[in-house]
Image (cartoon, rainbow, N blue to C red; front, top):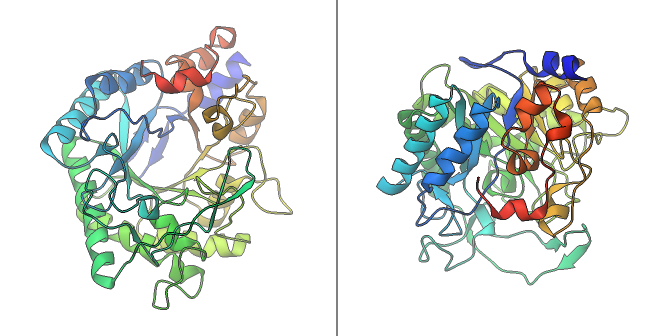
Length: 380
């Protein structure tokens, strides 16, 4: 396993104009540790420690774009304001000092925001149709009825403002020295709300078929592409499931998925990052390919896979207090060697053990610190 893991993971890979030294990516994981939106100094060291130990690319926690409706927590990080930008500049410098690469993940939470939420309590909750998910799930995935609430239905002017905010925040990230940006376009957040018919009930050009529902995502990518340097990578993180609904599907068939990917690829997306709860689960009937494998097959673009890498169960089980046993990665290596996907994002194992990448590549699997739910409350 030692030589095999080293050979599979240690190969460089080029995305846009950027060469990533190996195939291991630190998955974006929100730590809710920012004070007034400013990332603490510990967070810079936290990212740098993973880069120093062999992570080829760090993707930061979700960071609110510069729009008052983008966030819903005061301890979420921001891509605007002197303090937050200074904190992110420190993180970039720290990762680069260790020879690593770092992308900023940009976010608008959409209808996860409620009226009165910080950091801008006077701002409304924005959504394509002003509706949240119709029902939530508990941590086991069972449906739970929730009281309906309404938000602001985005006008064309609102859409244009948010598109500009994404582009402006991406340009800010490049100015700070980030090596690329990723859009959090999954898990029920704003861009994802346009994809899913349950939250997109519009009667204009942003709904009607799969391509129309992908239009907003394409406009965001195109605006960012125009605002940043040529070759500056743009990644789209997509999912079928939502944070509060495990059973939804934006795309029922590979054909539908391919149409949506085409809109985003044509707009200037460089890489797709496919978030699944378990990377080994097939995305569609009739094939063993996971969602990343299908994205690569349909778009021809580089893809990142993620979902319980090295662990026996998915994230929400851990968040509910359950342990996730460590497992081997032989099946993952099979898929990576077969070019089902190009890069592998690792989440909880890298929270528990900053040296996970170095230990896996060097065959020191027995030395890996096991993940426990307590690790979610620490930054080290």
